[in-house]
Structure formats: C-alpha cells, structure tokens
Length: 250
Image (cartoon, rainbow, N blue to C red; front, side, top):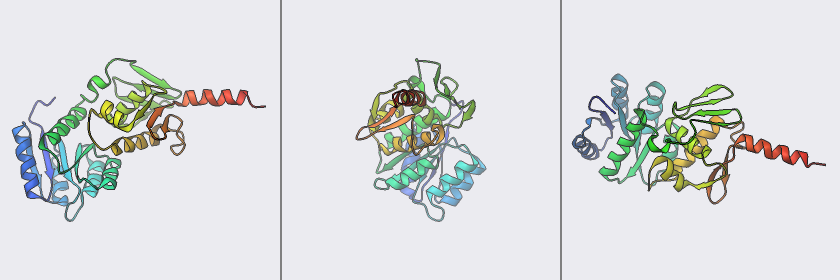
C-alpha cells in the first residue's frame, strides 16, 4: 500500500500511553511522532501531514474534539480517537466530526495496530476489499446511483460526498434489500469487527441519511427496524408502495 514507511502522529498528554503506543507501532513497521497537547499536535499535523493521527480526546488547552474538527476542515488526514470507555457521547460527536474510528481505553496494543492498518488500507484505496467484491458494478435506486468500483455515488446526477466507510455501508445495504440487520451484524459485515461499539453504526447511518434521504427525519431508503437495526427499503420501492396504496383509495 505504501512505498515508504507510513507515518503516525500520536497526540496524547499521557507520556506513558504515547510511549507504549509508539513503541508498539514502531515494532510493527510504522514511523511514529508524538505531541503532548492539542495545539502543538494540530500544528504539527498541519505543517507536515502524517498518514494517520491517533488522537486522545482528553487533551489540555485544545481538546481532542476541537483538534479533530480543525484538522478535518483543513487536511484529509485519517483520525483514530482514543476515548475513555464510558464517554459514548464524545465518541458519537467525534465520529460526526469525521473521525475514522475510535478505540476505547483501556485497549490492547494489538487491537490498536489492527485498527491503524484497517484505516490506512481504506485511506490508501484498499477501502473495500472483499466487502465490495462481486455483485453489481452499478447499483441504483430511483435517482440514487452508486458506481461501486469507483467509490462514487450520485443523487439526481450530482456527486454525493461519502466517506469510504459510508459508501461501503450504503453498498452493503443496497445489495441486501428488505433484509433487516442488527447493528452488531453491520459492524461485523461492513467494518470487519467482531467486537466494538454499535454506536459507530448508528452515527454512520445518520450521516448517510443526511446525504441520501429526501427528508432525513423521515427516511424512506434506510428504515429503522425497531428492536433490531436497519433495513434498506429504497426510495423506489417506497414510491411503488405509496402508488399502490393510492390506487386502492376510494
């Protein structure tokens, strides 16, 4: 994937965590730099963008959420957040700001490295792998069209700005119409995680709805299945049902 050693910037005010993470990443073949606070970490990331940032949310001065927001606005650098296990609201906000993934503390070094490799694969163009292999090259539903191999979605002929993971989730759902999936199933099928916080799926579905639904508050493409998860309905099938109901009106 990389013709050179991938560079990772660790932004964490806990020197012990930064040292352990850095040592393990170096052993796995990464080049590692570190910063102990949000302002210096952001400045370093913008001055010489690394291939990936590992970002702690609890930082002095400029907190991790603000660092993520500013970084996302100025540079397309992948971000993995480090969060306390109970900080679900911060994780959701971080994902909504554009973080690619998160790892809850305490975490295993092996898990973190696996997440780093997965995010770098997606950022480097190996985004879907077998998850997008096979099936139709072009998926369509009403005015929504997805060119799978090109990682390109269009709505009404206009490009839709989807992240690689949003597109992978969209393609998976479109390839399984009218089939309900639990959030944990989607986490495994699309993210490839056998464990993890299902709120990641919730946030990505919300962002997808904001981009492809006529009215995100009343979705017609991605339906919520109460007590289960989500199901692809599709605007075209919803329109067909509405038309059928109209025909039976007195």
